[in-house]
Amino acid sequence: MNSKVELYLGSQIFTGWVTVSVRRSLEHLAGSFELGLMLPGEPVPAIISPGQSVTLKINGQTVISGWLDQVNQSISATRYQITISGRDKTGDLVDCSAVHQGSQWRNRTLAQIAADLCAPFGISVRWQVNDVTAEKPFASFTLENSETVADALTRAARHRGVLVTSNAVGELVFTQAGSKQTDTLVLGENLLEAIHNDDHRMRYSEYRIRGHGRGGGKSGDSAKPASLSAPVGVVNDEGVTRYRPKIVLADHHIDTSGATQRGLREMRRAVARSSRFTAVVRTWFRSDGTLWDLNLLTRVTASRFGIDQRDLLICQVEFSLDAQKGETTRLILAPRDGFIVPAEPDSKGRGGNDAGGVDAFIHQQMKKQGITFNDK
Image 1: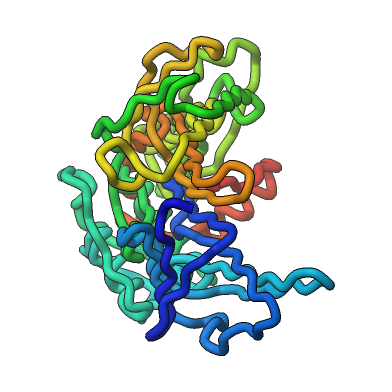
Image 2: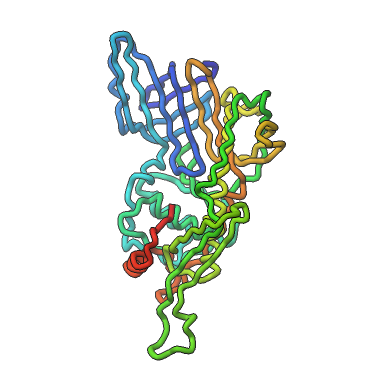
């Protein structure tokens, strides 16, 4: 191994790993790591135990700052190997329930709501968005029963058209699809291995988003039936030529414009997930000496796949070390458009603007219509 991988655990620094895997993703809130170490005839040091605070560095550059989750020991007649794994600080946001006094905020921004939820975990919030809509306060935001912090913030981020992820030092990060260009990848040169997967199983010809009736009509008022009807937004995917409809029930009160924006988001996300390019490159570093990172555009040339100088967004980075390939970086790339998330307007029901949860009425309507709620 050419690079220096150091795990800072308490007052000690551990090196000499035989296997290394470090993964970060725009689509997963917490970065993770797994390290393998051979200890012939030696017990596991007492400090290597789950729950310890850790910092993982590669050549002095921090890649994970968080907690040790697991210690796995494997013993045979010829070897004794331990594998340790963990995540950055935001892993607690994925696991733990969202708790806030009153479970509701009024006239607070997304960054302020996130700061309130993250403070008990000792996690800082970094706002990397320059957009007036994204910075608009919620008139009201309500937690759903038993939802995790990650689920609550992902839901809130959807209403502000931003992405939520984390960085190497364990901060919660709100951002948007990046436009900064990085190294060019050419198959047969610096691109060692390539996999191009086109999967249309999750794409649909139309995305039909159904809201719920406002229920604000007066008894005997037959002149305005439209005021009682459920708003519907329909977005078509021209890349799907056969009939494949998808119905999604909105999780809050929305108008037709909001339903259309939700449909556009669902379509873009499906397109991004349907076309993935996996690139394996030698070493963990870009040409400028810095580690490969998320949310950068890289230009790809792989003529055998029909890809010629196409700019794709890095949505996942994995650093690996093993005996066969040595140090490699696996990049998952996707069209940038799939990560441009349109903001969904706040709900406009009788109770005021409320980006809160799915109430009993919605569940009843879902059951009657045979619709499965899908917000993943």
